[in-house]
Image 1 (cartoon, rainbow, N blue to C red):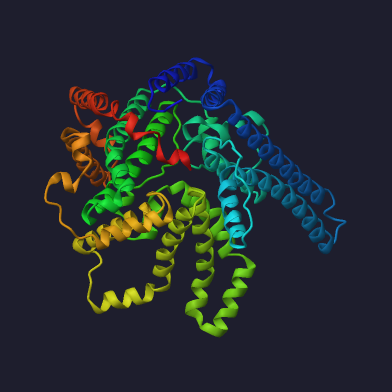
Image 2: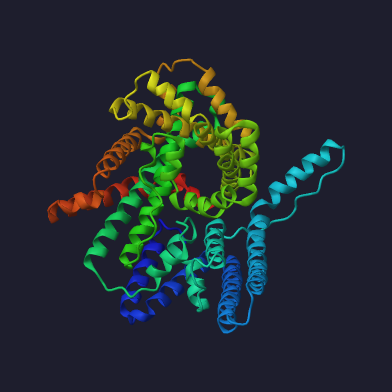
Length: 531
């Protein structure tokens, strides 16, 4: 079921009616049924994967909770008769049992993710190694089913499982509530990746019908549809044309194609988030925000704190901190201090953790060397800024740079946007070699286009009107992002008299119908759905 289809709109309309008709204590059941129908419409076979994840995570969490509760009850009952050493040994025994249960569930679910997502990539690497020895590779005749949104719902389920193990939250007793947490349809395909405490409080609360929720949710959905169906879909042919034929274009045309890709992927992904966050507001549910004006960031590290926020938070919580704060990491830092000094020892644990995080981030986005390189290049910039932080500070002091000056902040923002753009295209052009080829074309092909058609070869094929709409939407996106630095754009919109709001929304509808609907074929589905 495509999110930009009339079928989805009808599906949502029916779900909303049922949601507010049933007694409030049953509202979450409507959400569960809607989620199962939504996923089954994509693939009934894929629904089996979601069920396996829900069953195993729910069961493992319940076992761990039982062991934890039993430990507390046993220690309380035998408090007087047990020595300190006996208590410690008993706690260690229970902790080991809980850890084994958690690891079993983790290995199963992450194993499923790795097999369906990385099997072909791994087999290709094995065949490459075999060919070096002159042997015959393994024929890749397997066709594995990749469930929709498996990276998102698996990470969300794994986060819950680890939180139960760490005793940050209690295990959910009701299996069907856990199934809703794993399969909630507005976020199952592209996130955000939520933690259980936050999302369960929203899903299982009782919500009343609210005009304000409906109005604000509808406004956000409309803006999201404009981002995706108009801007992202209209700019897609320009990006596709440049990426497919970059070797025949001038450097400036290739660079424009790269810039357009940054526009496309932001409008595409943040548009999805606006649609789904707006929809959830209609249900009275507030999802975790996934974007905070990322293209206004002043460094790569800041950019990743503002782009796909929930994924970054997940990696930080479940990979970065466990590695950086582990005993072996601290010991390594202590030993390196004796040999290399305090400066290196202070950043070494963070560096090791960042390498692992960005390697995993690259692989999470895609099974190719292009995505591995993309992840490591992002990590390299962040690690270099960490290691050279004191040098940057001394350099800025020597040059008397005023870091609060708008010109300096503008320079940092533009520099970061350009860096992000170059990194983004690396895995998207085709192979890793193609990604580097686009870079090479930008920096080495300096022929100046003589006509607009030479500058933007796709312009003639896609029409001047479409290009004008693209530029208007980019300006509109930029202006609204600037305005949101002070307060949400919908708060500004609420100040407009009702007739003005209706006219603006009618214009939005018209733009979607006139330009967005015809562009659906060329724009394709949501880019992040593939991850």
